[in-house]
Image (cartoon, rainbow, N blue to C red; front, side, top):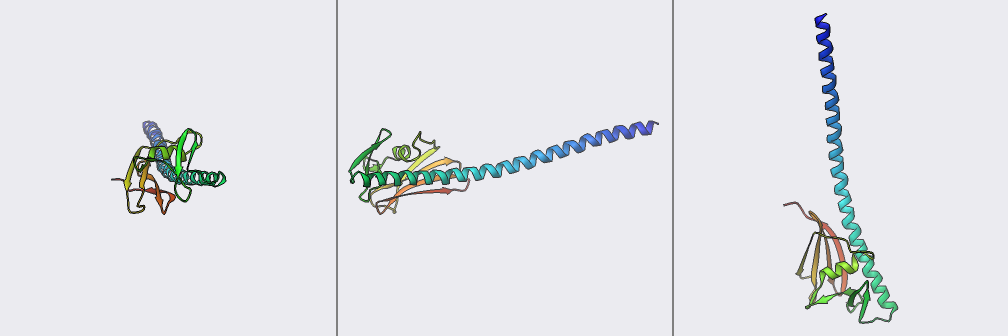
Length: 160
């Protein structure tokens, strides 16, 4: 009789141990999958931001054509000028004002946040610097001019 009670206790402990293991395994699988989904969402965010900035620039260029190619214009309280080919640009102290360009092109409602900004002179353009916006850890968006034409590009960097 004592042995039967002992077996029932042992069976009860084993059942709780198995349930705990199953729950732990499910939580672990969910966390791994969440990380993958989150990573893909961040990549998609950078891609959509690059597309939004390109579309905004194209829209402002179309407006430039429709308004008979003015030298300056204004949108959402931001004044900007145009390159020789009609692409919007904001110059301050003979460099692109990256922060204002971000505010102009990132969204029509309210500017999207970024973590940090790096601007540097590169071989791409004789006249203009390039702007690099860090969206999240390891995810960046580049804004640069090449042959008087604006370009945007989302890219990933490896963690340090």
